[in-house]
Image 1 (cartoon, rainbow, N blue to C red):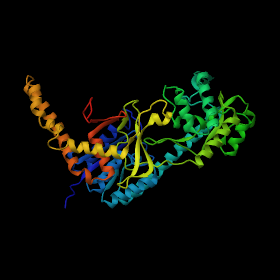
Image 2: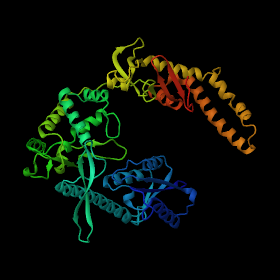
Image 3: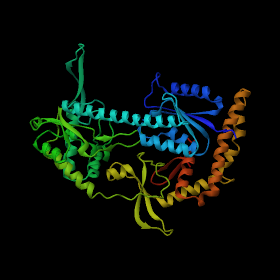
Image 4: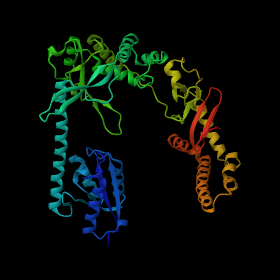
Length: 495
């Protein structure tokens, strides 16, 4: 019986280039290879492209889509330009290959000349996968070695300088071919440095990042980009060793934390600051996470420190104590309007704040509270909070009413075609026809969605209600007295 399943081409490149192993070149090579060996036409081929993704793991959108379609029995063969386009990790590749076999999907790599239809091909595939993993490990080791060399020089790597400093170019040594080697270093920004000192002083005084945030907000202190300093920004300043003056207290603390220290005791001169490399885990699509201090590569930098070692170490101990006793505020699992509800007074988000009370329906009671009001303790915004349980019910009831046959909105949607024809009567026939079709589809889609929501809202769980509301509602505003509801497509005015 002939296999009527399609063929999948997978291509990946970490960075965009218009030459060499570009996405387009990989696909063209795979297409030629397919047509030279198999009786295929263009309609039999499906392409999957992941540009800007590393081969370190398989968490790539198009790759995951391709594998899901393999599980659904859509493909008989997956082909790629080179083995490491699938993954540079041996275990990831082996797992992928085993899953393909499980669903009777063959595999071929063009550049490696690997075809798993023969025993020798399968053996070569595993060997190539091991070498791809080895290449990845060597690259990672090379990066670490480079960080070690940088640590010896105490150089600033460039990029956005931390608050309190500006980036300045310096002229270094001359290379063998006569070129001047240029580097960058941090130069103190006096005004910002005062803000950094204030953040440290206030944290020692108040013992709370939240209280420091409120103080800075109410006294109109801003970041270098002109934004208010959030809790995250304040914590980043407090944790950053770049501010610590390299003195005896700093030396003792860094050694106690078993950090990889690339400066001698004599380098801690009480003037310069600390430079730390390899501090964070940075992965595309994920929030930045800080590595354990034992993985940091630390040295005395070329820049001036701002905070004396004793004060900086005191702050690190306070942060550790706060972390141990930190209270994790419960989040409401039932609030429907998070991300949609705004304060009409200041424009900030209004977030659900859960209480310990229970209402007559057995629900946990929560209010929506203006973020700016909470952060400033009412000094920057005094908008009243609103009962979240009741507001969510009112919004659902209002949308249910809008979806009823006799509602003004449904009447408007039904009459939209007539109104449109009258308004555009003088337009050319072809433009009129195209506009008519597009508008009909938009209005009909909204009408169908409203009608469906009206009929099913009471049977949906919280997550599905949220999804439906986000399809229909663009924005909700609370001004302390009235709620303004803006549907998708409404640029101004609200219900």
